[in-house]
Image 1: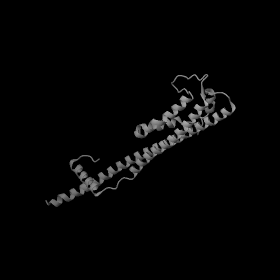
Image 2: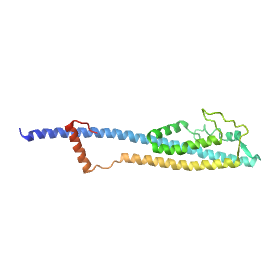
Image 3: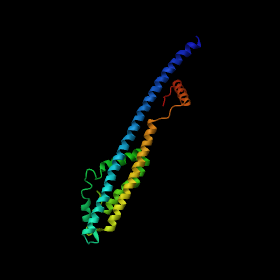
Image 4: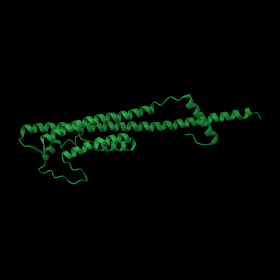
Length: 222
């Protein structure tokens, strides 16, 4: 039997097997790419909506307390503002459909960042929970699971209230910067996934040789 009679059918079988193997591998990579890009797209949407919500709330909080304390200065001779009065200024803020904090959205965004984007979650943890804590501390708001805070005879000075408004406006700027940084990171990864580097002759040759080796040894392709 001529060697050509053996090698020609073998080459045909190898070629068919390589084509099927590459098609399967490319399909797997395509599915993986679709899952990863969908995940980034979902997280980016959560980040954008969460930060927009927090920015709206924090900015409005600063404006409300500043406007009301200015009016208090004009109409009262008291040295401080009772906490009961302070609470009336912001009572409707948390429940407002635009200016209130969407706590479910907040939790979902924090969860997705923690499990899928650790570096961005660390940025979130460094600033976002602290802003809510600062608000709760200033207004002596009791959180679920904590002891009730007695606000009787508690006051905040006009200077403290104005300083709090300034602090909240600084937090707004920090949130704007953080939103931009996190979205830029997500956008960079999304572009990296959707614009893969063009294969080189070396990489194509290596792929063919690896496929032939897998065919001959019976091992699975990646």
